[in-house]
Length: 125
Image (tube, rainbow, N blue to C red; front, side):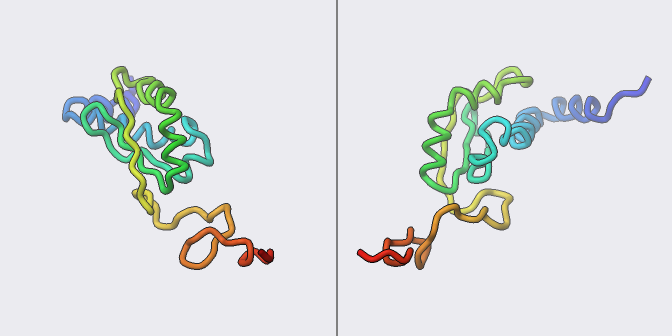
């Protein structure tokens, strides 16, 4: 009988106390399905601290959306892993961990990263 490598590695990870890390990696892999593609581009599960999942977001609007979806995120985090985190903490950073380049901005930007004013967009006033 052949044992799948996934089962062998899962058993080894539990023995070595890496179950939480495996859960975090799985959560990172499933993140777009949990929060949706648009929100996954601007947020990422960062780490587990005790019973808290720390999520990194690149702006406050994404952070607020993560906070609103906390219950659904916690249910998804626990799915298939038994006891998952019981809280979500969101931190805002200008860069996501593990991402070399940020996604293109959906809005028109002015100089120095500010939102463009009416005159910079070609409007007078």
